[in-house]
Image 1: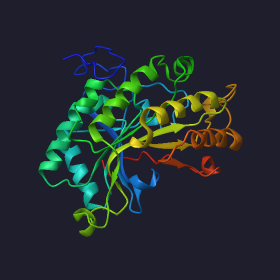
Image 2: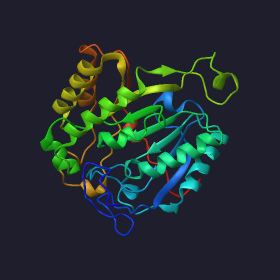
Image 3: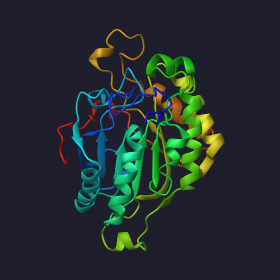
Image 4: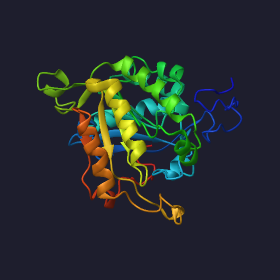
Length: 305
């Protein structure tokens, strides 16, 4: 069956050829391990059980996970092995299963989640996504995913075309986000009274259900960032959390780019945060000004695969 899971609609038979995502129907992943660099209510102290899938439906020129997004790294696994990986991460103390860039594998991931849940998976499932998703594909995860962690990268189609080869990004992402919020409802968190907390399976304060929308502030694009904030806050209010990120890292491949060859300045980042505060944001996360000096990129060394 030809693949049209993502908005690229490349209509490729991925049983025999690679789709726009760069992948066939065989699942490839580069790492499955405890990951402590997500938002506090996702990672907690013990970490999120992050599974990094190979391939991607976007072509972001500033991609932070370039090696796996372009499928330069990855090891083939079966649906059965993926289900076992989920259970192994739970045994290691993960607060949740964190599916990183899995949109081109949704049918296989759904099967693995059903199998894992049938065999004792209790922790929440987080879908960590660019939000460049078909609503029909997101709908396939209804009842299987507890927390959605999508980006909202841009509103300006000129920027999304130049940076991600996706002029329709906002149109697509806004519809996908609407479906994610419909599925999960308002955010809920684990408290001391929850059985999974009392039995030590999950830490208190971890998100149980809900949506956290991430926005990475890019150098020279604060006007678009402010438009994203305005859209999210006016559309969803307290029904979502918003994570305003300053961790943009300019890589050598972007040397000479008029904007993306430098870090975001403190003034740029703070102007977006202050704008969101002025709009009345209540549920949000911000990053320290020097966070871009840290590395949030793990080693894609096939740990846990």
